[in-house]
Length: 115
Image 1 (cartoon, rainbow, N blue to C red):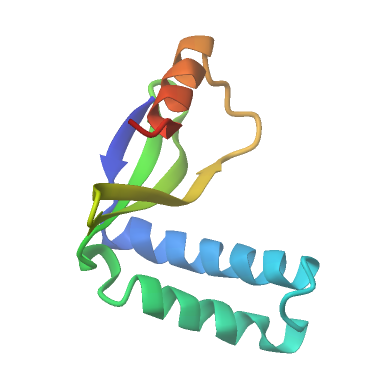
Image 2 (cartoon, rainbow, N blue to C red):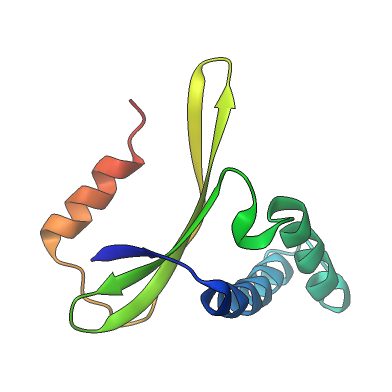
């Protein structure tokens, strides 16, 4: 699996899908009413990605499988704080039926650890 930076078309598709999914998750969790969920989700994305792909500290990549091609995406932010740098993964999405080899799963677990 490789990371490939999103282009504008990828970002547009990512934004549509992830806003829809985010709104639905908030409704299912009981956090938002369905009639307000789309607008609130869009406002959240405007707040956290105000410049889209060019938002400072935001990194958006496609997950590309060597056989299946683009199988998902990841969005994370890196910020500075008084202890150094922090990374926060906002979204990691994989298409259903994506096969990830055991070595790739171990590598992902290592990436989630804090130093």
